[in-house]
Length: 474
Picture 1 (cartoon, rainbow, N blue to C red):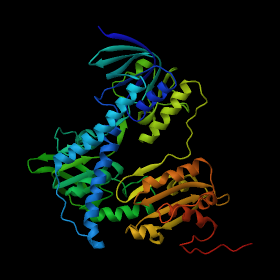
Picture 2: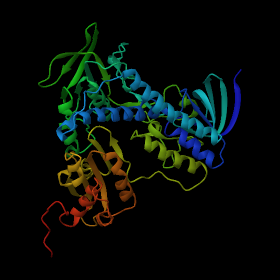
Picture 3: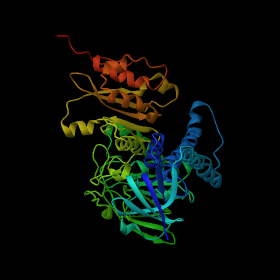
Picture 4: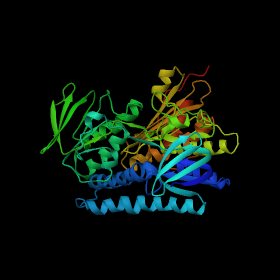
């Protein structure tokens, strides 16, 4: 027989939405049970996504810099790869340390955890199958089950040489030839890792450019660098079929000026992710999904069913870990009766390739599509002392402001460390800052952060290090 438990709050999913929700609730005295299928908390992001990929991208960056250093008069021997040791570093010293930290936090905050799969049986009960079958009756529930890689059925051939992002990050080997299907951020990040480790990487993208969601002028420096590191990038190209053979995965391509057929040692399918709602019994709880498969929620992250909330990837785009964590706070505070509301002006996005690409607020593509009046201010890193000193002048910082008020609408950055720099712009947008607020905030010299300040300065004429014709004074 199942054990029966009654809890004030049930959180389903231990990822970057679920575990912060449980911890935040516990901090406010709400007794919480956290249910997750994984043996270790942290979700896809920590165990199979954000964290292991960034650890590997750091290694890839070191490899590239060891080659580039020759141009600066510093020569290193060719890096020698110890693949088992690299796997141990990523899974043990990085992922293992962080998952252990989360387990310790839940213990210290007195959050109960239960490993297993939760399925709704009514609007206020779930059945948890696993090591300890349990019926959980809850007063409130937060669904935070995240998302999973989307692999089209024609490519589900049961061959482990055809990988999703989870499989690729486990580093089964370094293939001689790797095909990446999809020119989005996951495919490019993982492709960059394998290219640095020694694979000949080919990217196939069905749309007319990689990273279709980003402004083209920001993508351009990254694309130029990737074209040197990758074997090929084919856009406006479709994968007609995958055929496993003893010699490799034979791939048929459809597109202009592309080979009709190529053979690869491994294939990474990276065409997006889908909300993880299968086998949750949402219909038994009275919850219906929207046309894209997400759980509809209001500004307090509440579903149409009283007492049940949803956050993170399962509750709508963008599918970003930090968005899930921010939603967790809103959902818990709403449950506690506080006047919380989900209404961010800027959710930052970062692509951790080299160079990195980051943006927040309105980008130029969106501004044009929505008909929002805007002025574009660009600062090329060739005029940055710091960028010149570290030989990373390919970067660009771009700010969109309202033409009249000069309020900051959005910021995009491509270049080394762009992900670390974007937070300043998020704060500026959230606080309704105008460009003068940014330029009069003294930035340390010499740093790449000065490029944000000098972009803002362009709103009022020419930046110190970039001449721009000044408007005539009326």
